[in-house]
Amino acid sequence: MNVLVTGAAGFIGSHVIARLLQRGDTVIGVDNLNDYYSPNRKRRNLAQALLNPRFRLHEIDIRDRRAMESLFAREPISKVIHLAAMAGVRASILNPAVYKEVNVDATAGLLDLASRHDIANFVFASSSSVYGEAARLPFFEDDPDIVPASPYAATKRASEQLCFDCHRLYGLRCTCLRYFTVYGPRGRPDMAPYLFVQAILEGSELTMFGQGDSARDYTYVDDVVDGTIAALDADLPFEIINLGNSRPVTLRHFIQLIEHFSRQSAIIRRAPVQRGDIPITCADITKAKRLLGYSPKVEIEEGLQRFVDWYHTDVVGQGEISISQAPLAVGDSRELVGTVEG
Image 1: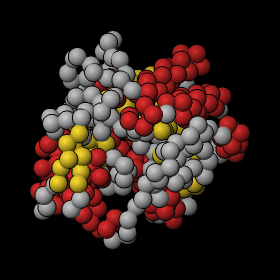
Image 2: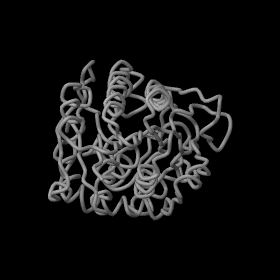
Image 3: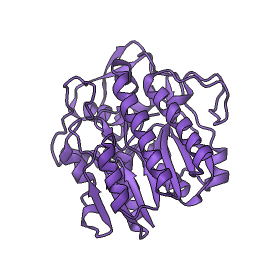
Image 4: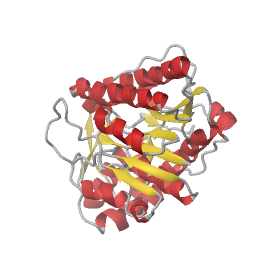
């Protein structure tokens, strides 16, 4: 099977590609290797994949319609996993136009290409952020009252609708996976798990928004990869499916666990709750179990231990990873990476 993976060099993308190659698939990766964080880090994410003759990496921005059309014309693509996105709730509030351009417009173009090239299955990475401040817990995929609370969440919800429209109008098989706060080795250096481990190990200050009682359904990357590959293989007509752990962890406890595994205490600065943040996420995974055979295996304690160990060996051992501080501008694609937030 020939699988196109967008956001190939990112966190989730690189793990998905490793699994696909391991089982014998041919993988066509797309990533623009922007400098939101070190392109060398992204290349290192794909170091093993690049040694495999069944993997080809194309340095393309998914907004470049001509380049994407050329790719579809010359590569024998049978299925697509679309992970590339502008990620980040707070950044989307500052620059919503860029989020629409990358997350909605480029996704629409990719869906059009998939429809015209008879792609067998299109798996789209959505986010638990679409639920907003949903009143009903856990979060159910068919909840009629979800209201996205940020531009980032709104772009993901809009792209889900585009997937449905392409299925209804053109028969494209699409599965939208709502990821719930994915963490693990190769995690992005702008996300909380990475920043907290970094701050605690360096003895620097970390910021805790609110009183630490907000909770997230942290989901280990290997479990998310299991669900993503299962969705790719299932060839469902159209579905929206939660991929979470269904066991929320408070921010306070999350920090305490990192302190335990790092054997160091956190220096905490408290800050007000940020606009667009939601107090709790919790996935109902009944549908994922029924349709995908999904069953998350890695508990938060084991997952954070693995993450801290990875940070010691791969990050401390390889040197600092810097994140660009330049302000985003319309057309800037620095955050076009293979991960989403929940």
